[in-house]
Image (cartoon, rainbow, N blue to C red):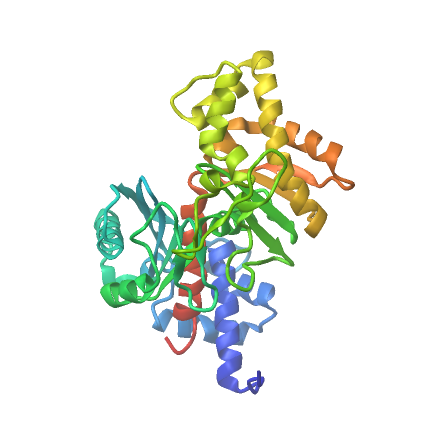
Length: 393
């Protein structure tokens, strides 16, 4: 790729973006503080702030008392200059969130599932915008988290087992319907983005996220970047062949893969149905697998044998990732994984140490709230800021 020449316009654009990012992360700030933290002169910082004020991106929000002379004006990014939307899509419904350009969440709603992907997303986004009192036209980006495989070359859905109405072509249909930039991303990948930005992996460049929920998923971050794989299939750990589980097999007629929990592999041992069966064997008969794990984690010593057995199954996947990638950290997330808490995580750490030559640190997710929705909003904000904060916008 050819480098852009260092023209005055480019330098202004870089300075503006640097100041805006600084104000988002550390604001409000005075002109002097912006100059000091960006390395710009007072004159350049003043000119920069004047440009950003004219574009409606920053505004004076107060004053800071100093020594001699008048108080210094405090500048901050205007939250209403742009908004983004994020969605967490699953078989039981859609959770949608709206955030302003600073990252403040203005609304979060949930809608029932539907048979038409475009109508479902449209209605969720419109309802969230109404709740936030934000016009749809103010949205600059929408990122949707879904289970299954997303083609990294086209950005379109390849296959989602339990969302049959989500298929190739839905991305373009959504963009036409909503008339705004739409991105579809694997839900576990978005959970990893949230961990990197505001969770347990803030200071870690190489880590993996094991997602234990209805099924099993995995996200891999190497050098601070998501690793999706050539076809988008990196992380489909539910298909991993393990002792005690039948091998997953492809449906040669439809040329698709079944749900790991149904077709074999690690998912057949550690998916929600298998976990509930295991829980019953140990005397925990709650309505869902997640509730079984939560009950065992709260049951003291009586929950230990079930958690030991579950940890051993999950350790097969953790050990496989460790041997191939040797990450610094492996996080446990998903509703089922988080329900086990530290008691389950500690057992996974011990089990991995018994079967693996190296033992990474295993830790529990630290993202507050819905990690997929949080990751979707963060990804949407990253894209929107590239658009809104550029001098050409």
